[in-house]
Image 1: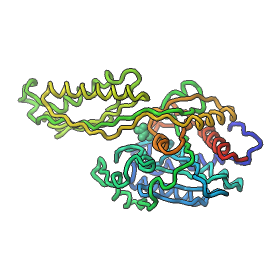
Image 2 (image 1 turned 180 degrees about the horizontal axis):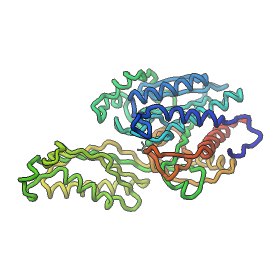
Image 3 (image 1 turned 60 degrees about the vertical axis):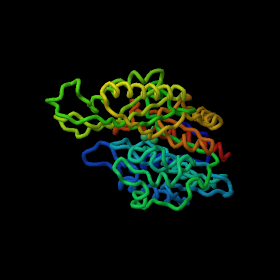
Image 4 (image 1 turned 45 degrees about the vertical axis):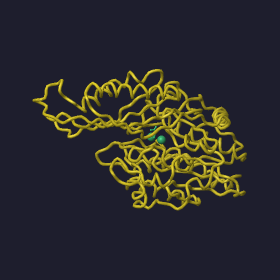
Length: 415
Ligand code: HGY
Ligand code: MN
Ligand code: MN
């Protein structure tokens, strides 16, 4: 545990926080998997949401759910008219995920409210813990969808009509799991927003540091590319007469590393051939490209290079191309005052720290559109995430939560 100034009456109950992380991490674990899968609006996501609501109820929080299924648990204040300080993240996951991504920040938010409850203190302004819907965006795009709707960046009806990669309509799934709330998204604009999250990258661990003061966040460009060629016999069609959609997709993907230069990141996460049979030249190929860069001009240059590469290879093979932009978020700079406050807390608590950029997308980048927002990182072991091996030691998890509590205490000027 990190040394705490004797004066505070707000104490972190680290044992309950670690226990809740472990219990939530057990929801969605499949027998044949090491990790858990709680993809947005599935039954497993519902089970995680139900558990979160039970913990919110146990803390006596005022619980509200908005029309896109965002969950809010609020500790009322002495002066209830003020806008809340919001602590948020997400509890949906990718497939076969770790237990910390998103969940850590939501449950650390509950730990902050528990500290107020146990100290018998009312905060000087309401504190709201938020769990945003569909942060991962792997079933319904875009990612960070719930916080984007909340921040007014996506119309709620459009979001409710989103069709998933499995053909389901988001609004029907939301109603099916019982989380189609009635609160208008964004009805309550937060005074400030804090998000505690694992780094999901290698930097803090490599530098032996305990806390990341996140100043900014990369721009994100997601595209789905569909290649339409001609099916034909694998044994009778001469190579120069083929219109092989599978070869075009594979050629583009194999050259992505030439696009990922000067700090831009490029990932082809999905690829599908049709008819996907060993002796049939693919008539259709569908693949995705995830481009990221903290610099908007470089991200646009990478998008142009990708478009030129796809066009050149497609022309040579005589196939048709369709590109659908699934996500396009510009880089975000977080609130300097909040970043300073996080840095001051890390120093006060004697924790080693550095300022850094977030490589991953987070709900904070959406809430930054409507309120001052910033993030706190803790290290990820081996920099691994979106993988059951995702891990952060208990001491580091508790240090991050101590920083969150200390920042809140100072922002609310509480004893
Ligand atoms: O894609 C991301 O960066 C986030 O995990 N949704
Ligand atoms: Mn996350
Ligand atoms: Mn994630």
